[in-house]
Image (cartoon, rainbow, N blue to C red; front, top):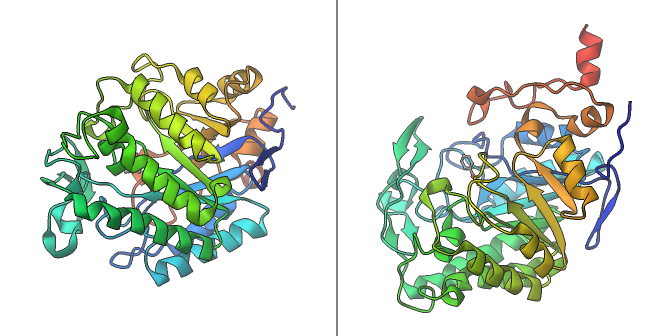
Length: 367
Ligand code: 8OZ
């Protein structure tokens, strides 16, 4: 049975042809090698299994040791990490897939145990988030951060540039800047976390500056047509908030549009929670942005079809359904039932709950 929908129409994303409108959302899985943070050898299987999505976005990958906030998340700053990712991109490309890597600096959402010499995580301002991270096998309160010195900011932009070159060397089709979910760039943008009085704090223009400077620097390395960004205007994730998200993100998106980024990936509502968490006009962002609009958060076949038909988005990112359904694209086309996900195996561990979810074909053969 096939159902009428735009989900299976191809899409031209800058220079890259996508087979359909499905995006696999970035999903943190905490299975990188402890100590080196090289992606797990299983990651190549995991992403290759899901390569029928028009575009895969990798799990968030730290741009530096300082940018890490959780146990065993992969990096993209060392030679070994680049070699590990190369195996992933090769396998995805062999299956005809396309893959971007998500570039991540967690800012204050980290723990001393992950930082060089047990130091403090960095943030726009020395304000500790009310929230937890996962380190040394348990959930722990995030550590007290220190405010970045003005003179340190160019170094962070340089880190983003360096890892963008690494990403291209690793064979990625492009990069996604993680500007969402209460991590560093979102912390700078939003006034709940940014109390700076220099050029990176205060006005909307100043708070948006780091996200836009990073976007410009990354686009200069990868090409704007291979650079996307993820934002989450109203999410409360990781204790983030802003007094006027509409004005803030109207300004940010105008800046991203001027840079000609290839896509804007928007977490609508509370990340992993209610889509109507807070009032926000997403159509306004779409109007301001000429590139592709990727909509995310709580989409299913029906809502995705409705939104694509209405022209409110170009691509739809699915998260958890891709964890438990490597063949999500084919299952939804057939109207076949979906595997349920097991939350207990989301973060950390091995193949179980990672590469062992069956395709429909495998499940049928086993009957
Ligand atoms: C879940 C657990 C840890 C990190 C995000 C990178 O929310 C994450 C994340 C999600 O963007």
